Image (tube, rainbow, N blue to C red):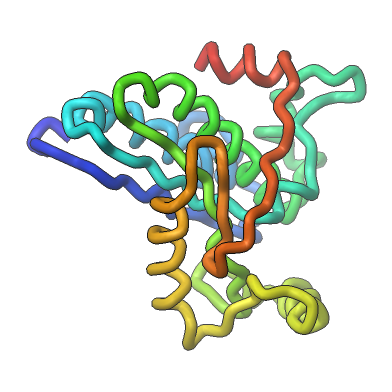
Length: 204
């Protein structure tokens, strides 16, 4: 990052899915570290460059699957054990969904912090790929996607991958602060953050 003079658009897109349980050398569950903490760290490294380059935009590629999980405990408090679970509590799909929820929350918090300095942030849902390099070809996902295909516009085939990638960037550039879009310009609302979550993420 030290040799980057200017940066107007940063797309955080790397992700892993359906991994067997493992810990990184930092002692954290791999899906959580790859899908969320990696992006968080990259943005921190490039934050000064983005601010110097303002106006700038950070695009965090999340997923609509963020809707299907929770990272709070039964009392409504942030449960860090859900973010980096033990082997006995690990389920790959939930780990992925939680990491995508973290992406959305991170994007919102990043916008709150940096928008006064000319750097905005949006989370986007790029569309659901039937087959991809992050193991969405897992038979369970293949079955679910096949059944859901007639009912969703965000289900894209492999031949539309390039179109989906382009629309992911262009859609996010058209949104206003705090909004998200699918590649087909269908808005989906953000999850509501509790005061506990906001406080916790603000302390990162």
